[in-house]
Amino acid sequence: MNNEWVEITNTTRDVINLRDWTLRDADGNCYRFHNIRIGSRATIRIHTGNGRDTRTDLFQDRRDYVWDNRSDTATLRDDRGRVVDTESWGRRR
Image (cartoon, rainbow, N blue to C red; front, side, top):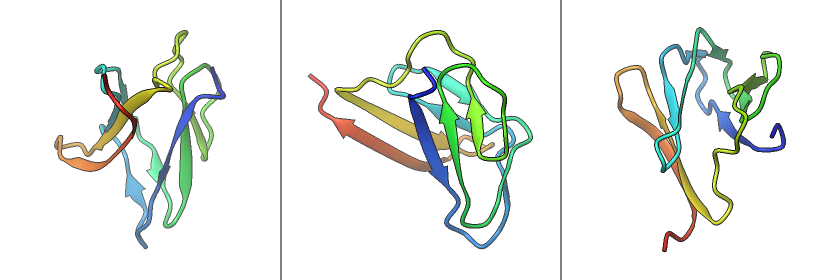
């Protein structure tokens, strides 16, 4: 399951603390960030499976896949619940 991930890129010039931000799929599966900082113009991957968190890779420690290959939506919200970014693929039937 570590081959399934979502990438988040900080396109700003500032370091951003993602503490209490969330990443959610269309089915409501939710990953809450802890005290994670993402550097200016840096990218991190949030893997579905198990692993050891690093500066560039975080792991949800799930046993089942989260992201639907046919269609899904990834929504990133800040610590106040405001949508920061969303990405959708495929079509819902």
